[in-house]
Image (spheres, rainbow, N blue to C red):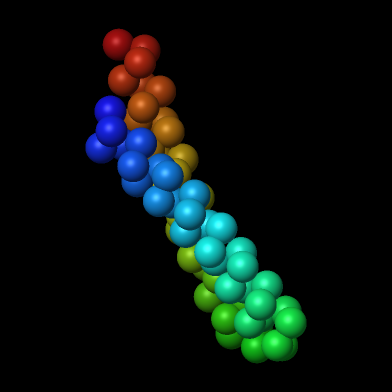
Length: 62
């Protein structure tokens, strides 16, 4: 169980860091490459989180 909870927590931290980085460098400093990169990373983290949550949910149904 912890092998799936730990990556989920790390994905949450990664999403939060991407939000901060995207805002600071992308919006405030008007470097839109950073904003685009942060958005791509957030999308990847969300897809990975959904996969882990589906796997955890399926394990509890058994």
